[in-house]
Image (tube, rainbow, N blue to C red; front, side, top):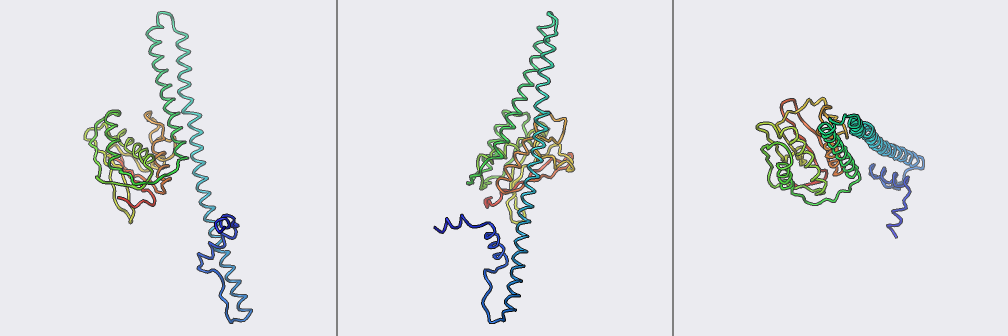
Length: 295
């Protein structure tokens, strides 16, 4: 019965309860003061309660505004991707098909094979982009099911797989015994994107090193993925975690979704992600996982 009553609490009543709780008041105490003094005290109390109510409402509005602005940024980037990224492979397919139709009979064999190969590669890339879009869409709607996760073992497994599927053989180092409280599926995707990103830019270099580890900062557990690759100017760092935006516009090896996915996963866990880098000095991606207390 009490639970049903709690569910039906008027929002204004709940806001007042929160305001009075913040003030440390629940009711005005009875006293032997004159009626005028009691009225003044009651008026002062009401004014203070309304002030706190306004502050709470403003805080909620600011949070809603920030979430809306972030959603609008993602939507704008998504629209650009649909209008540009998906259109380019289709344009290539169209042009090459027209060229095949215009070839002379004696040229058809050799040149047609080359053009068909280009068509195939374009369709593969388009398919990969669609898959990436679908994965990112699923991440944005995911629910976090927390449990202890051995990140050290997970990172080692991801690196072992990259040895067979990606270029380069960097020296991969992992701090032992790193355990976090989080969703194992989402955390695997997080590490795959961060380690894969480091492998992509540093893995093919001579003497390349990639490291996964953990540290403490201001009482919080901070995880990191570090590489000694080419690095980048931090002036462009804000682009890294926005979907479909690449740090390097000439980069044809990705879609600008991996790091955005990593950032979304960290946010779902109540944590934050940031990066430190400089040209020719590698890059280090740091992240926390909210209320976790493992290390």
